[in-house]
Image (tube, rainbow, N blue to C red; front, side):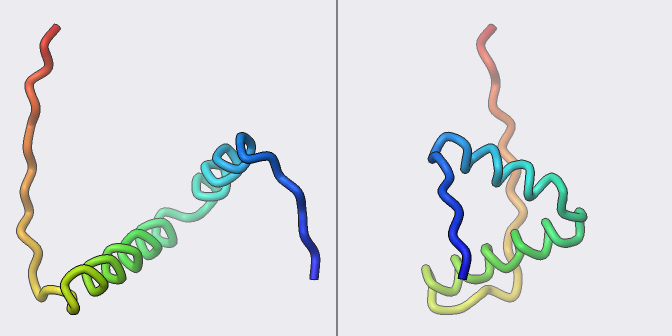
Amino acid sequence: MVANRVRMEDEDAMDVVFWLNQPVAERIKAVTTLRRRYFTWLHGSFPDKIAKAVNKRKFDV
């Protein structure tokens, strides 16, 4: 077993680099897995359909 010491500040940057180096299909697969696990944990099951809702916020300039 190997362990590497990493500063907390560097860990976030390393995570970003890791995910940017992954193919798009792998990133989408990971997000889909996380969504499925979260919805199952929150509601007990994953819904057959999820409503698509997009809200556009007005920005005060």
